[in-house]
Image (cartoon, rainbow, N blue to C red):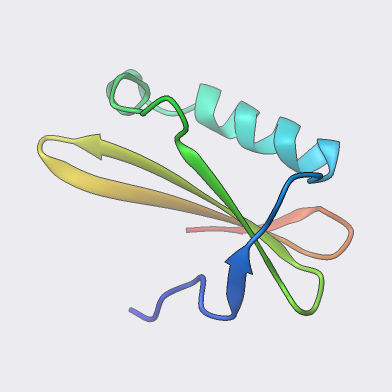
Length: 82
């Protein structure tokens, strides 16, 4: 499977409030097991040259590492969850 973050680079501060709120809600809806294994800063933020944003949330379960990728279009609406 190709890396869904190909073409994205680390985003600095200043993400739109709707992205921040959406990814926080997403984290709150993870399973109890996944929430227990989140680190202090579980999300990384990315953007690409077209204005899209992405959030990577890292968690672990049963000794395996898992990533949730949330993709947002230019108007900060989530369009894909991997």
